Amino acid sequence: MDITTLDAIDVHVHVEQDSHGCYSLDDELMDASAAYFKASAHRTPTLSHIADYYRSRSMAAVVFTVDATSATGHPALSSEEIADEAAAHLDVLIPFGSVDPHAGQAAIRRARRLVTDHGVRGFKLHPSLQAFQPNGVRYYPLYETLAELGVPALFHTGQTGIGSGLPGGRGIKLRYSDPMLLDDVAADFPDLTIVMAHPSVPWQDAAISIATHKANVYIDLSGWSPKYFPPQLVRAANSFLRHKVLFGSDFPVLTPDRWMADFADLKIKDDVQPLILKENAARMLGMAAPEKSTEETREP
Image (cartoon, rainbow, N blue to C red; front, side, top):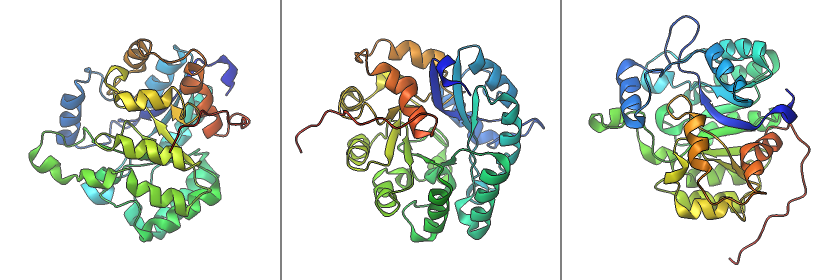
């Protein structure tokens, strides 16, 4: 991938349908998610469609599914298949994998194979959907493996549209996606790069604090139109966290076209925009040489 030809790197893109016509979520959860986001009719693009979509916009996309088999009983899409199909589109696609954290040693072995045999560049975890508390020590061997493999872990944080509006939210517990639980993980695994996905509402201040305190933690801006970003997140992204914040859309429920249009209306400094849109992600993914930090500081 030649990042010099790209205008942006979207670090948060869901693969919702595989080449066999299988979906990442069951019908009830898919419909609830679409209603929550007011998503367009094209809710389940295939990987080849995603590649064409991003190529036409001179963007790269980090693509993944979420393996929540144990928690939902719904068969996950194959991360192996996603990675292998992405190999035909490496000019624009960056494959991440996902493993079921409840699978124990099997998840660890699979994570290794996904990296070594299928070229996966990172992993997506969704504590609420996968029904696990991420700072539980039973999951530490998985994090140790990811750190050893040198690949980042992207964790969903904050509220989720999955299950939204359903009785009991279909049993999905938001507290598992409190970013403060990831502070333990970041502290105990300083060599593991962690991306906290989304504005972490209702815990936005906690996410900002963690990303400020832990050198190995980033924030992606996916899942929300920029016009709804909490003001403290905009201030942080524009100043002391300008090297730690990443463009992400949450495609297909939120398109990069809409995200970019609303982002243009934010008062983001001219020298910060390229950091958020591409340069920070390139560095986080190991696609660019690390730069000496020139981050602004603030009083504690």
